[in-house]
Amino acid sequence: MRTIRRPDNDAEDYISRFSDTGNWQIRPLPGAGEENPMKLITKKIARQAQKQYPLGANMETQLVVAKFFDPCSSWTWYLMNQDPADPDYLWGIVNGFDIESGSFSLSELERSKGPLGIGIERDLFFSPLPAIDVWRRLYKGEHI
Image (cartoon, rainbow, N blue to C red; front, side):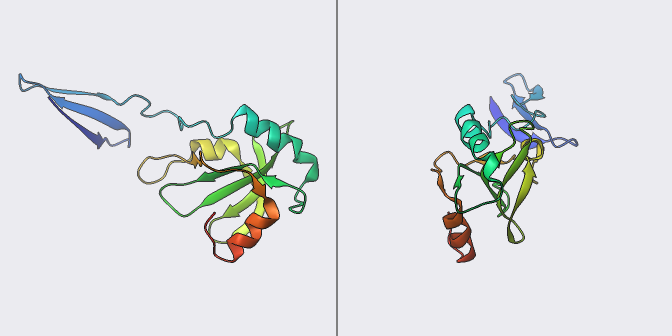
């Protein structure tokens, strides 16, 4: 039996199996059509980000506690803080068309899928760094 992946017209992934009898069996891949299965914000990250929320946009006194990236583009989001009253509201540094600081939405990151159907991912090997250092390194063109 041979397994292949192919998108249908709705851009969902399917498994197609050609059995020994010559019949095709097509069924959705586990997780196909669902929101991004990666947990972007763990409880630990949420605690760290919410603790820093009163510090606002001050990069001198905060850490970047998480890094999110789009594997299909060069866009990267560096999380500094999260509103405890509205966990969808995130603040940090965004390296997209330009390097800037500002708010971004957790729900939009979770829903976003690139041209290959891959969602935004969290850098599992990222360790918290001072926000001002991240900002300066990005402006120098360094990879973080």
